[in-house]
Each structure stands twice: as C-alpha cells, then as structure tokens.
Image (cartoon, rainbow, N blue to C red; front, side, top):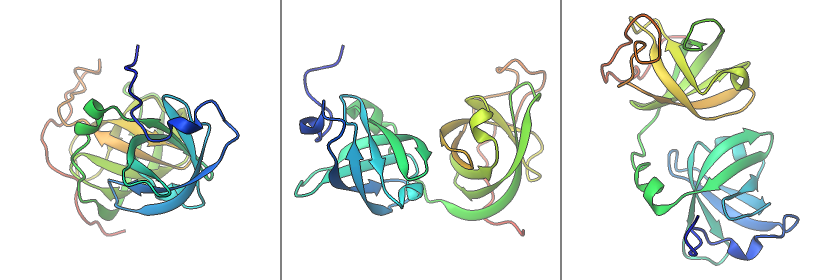
Amino acid sequence: MCSAKTPHDLAHLQGNPEVREKVQVVDFDTLAIIDAVVTNVNEWGCCVTSEHVQELYKNIGIRLSGSRKLSKAHVTSVKGNDAAVVFSSSESSVSDKRREKRNDVKIPVTIADLEGITEITGVIVDAAKNGCRVKAEGLTAMPEEVLLTMNKFDKPVVAEFAWRNDRSAGLRLLWNRTLEETGSCESAVASEEPLPETEDA
C-alpha cells in the first residue's frame, strides 16, 4: 500500500520495540525543542518519551543524534511522559505549513457534542486564528468534533481534536462548518474572526 521509500529516518529501529534511542524533538507550532527517547518504531509511527513531552503540540520533527535532517511526524495523543506519534508523508506535511503565532489567553469555554447532550467546562489557555489549546476534565470522553461556546461569540464554533489527553487538548477551529451541516438546527458562526488575544480572568 505504501511506497518502498520510508518517510522517516528511524527505519533501523523498526521491528525492535525494546530498543531505545535518544533524539531531539522540535515542535513546529511552538518552536519548543526537547530531548527525548524513541521506542516502538514501526513503518507508521513510534512512541516519544520525555519529562517535557507535554510541551509538544501537534506538528513535530524528530532528529537522531548526528543526523542533519528531521523526520516529520504528528502527535496523536499524550499520556504522562509518553507521546504517540505518526510519521508524516510529504503530502500531508505541506498542509500543516501554517505555524501560526499563538497567544497566551485565559478564556472560559464550554465544550459540547454536536447534539448538545454532553458538555464540559474548561479554559482556553492559548489561541490562534485556526486553533487553540484547552484545559478541562473529561476531554477523552468527547467525540472527535465538538462545539465551543464562549462569551465573546454569539454562536458556538465547530472544532475538531488534533490531539488530547486527560486534562488538555489541541483543537482545530472549523470556521467554514455550520451547525446545519452537522445536523443541528441552527447555523454556527461562519466568519473567520480570530479568538481574542487577551481576556481578563
């Protein structure tokens, strides 16, 4: 199904789940750089372990010691000191070029399923035009697509999870989606107004 060419620089670790190798991980969204260890490497992804793994957002590059290039990957989940990542194909990495500047904020938010049956409350702690990070309890129990309700907006905003763990998550804001399209009775805001940069706690 895949081309014979391996899209990452860790092929020599495939098939040896116990082997650990030190790496540096660069986060393309926040520009954080952490030291980590990779294990469980296969054709599709690996496990990245570090006490600083919570600093990773979504789009990352993994650099082996002595290597002059990065293997592009996406963080799919974070638990404790471990992050599950999948390697990027060259096609998918082009679509993640945005690298937006994110703003530290403290915005109360209600996160609900599209039907409005289940909802939890939390706080948006950083935000950009097309995405945000939230802190809340119960995020792993929510569906992939949710509605974000904030005082600054007249109507909920449709969003999807980019990654999540028990207490925090990264969300992509789907400004072009409406509640009508999701099966609900009202239309959501379809503007491209970015989240506010600051808000009083």
